[in-house]
Figure 1 (tube, rainbow, N blue to C red):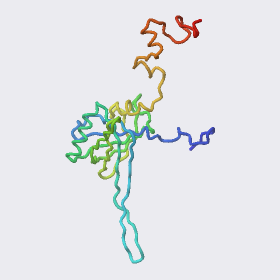
Figure 2: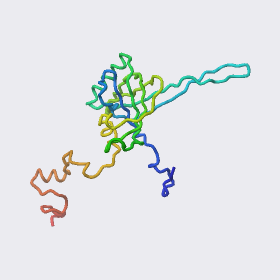
Figure 3: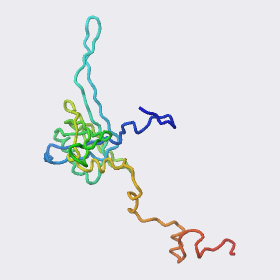
Length: 222
């Protein structure tokens, strides 16, 4: 790990960013040819991998023996209007108590795909899980979102996913908030708003364009 020589702090470029962790999902009723969908527009997410232990009382004391591992993916998902089918599928999975397929993609480690020019590969952790519910947070002046815990059945598995397996939303929408933008990427989506002075001048036949333009009057009547 290197340090920023100016501020003597950890170089951010050396660190893995939580922003680049994206979750995907598929349901048993999806077609096997369907792409992996993005699990909402996520905010905070987390994973846990916790082994259980058992205490055994012996004559000379207590020993602890390791047990099964409990693993969970926790995703705080914000729902877009176009995510209605995904949202309803999650509710169905909860009501019918069925497992879903869930992936955790780490785009910090994305690489070019040596088998497919112009494509990428991304490491992923996959598990089958029961969502614990779809609790809706409906705070006024906020966006509707759900904090969902996925209880992994057994253990998750590490692997590699190719770009062609992913719904483009995962890497175009899910990561777009963290891409660098050029000047041509911003603007042109809203009309400019005139200043109060320009609005008054336009409404009353005066010349707009700010101070110092023709038609202005000097203070004191001179």
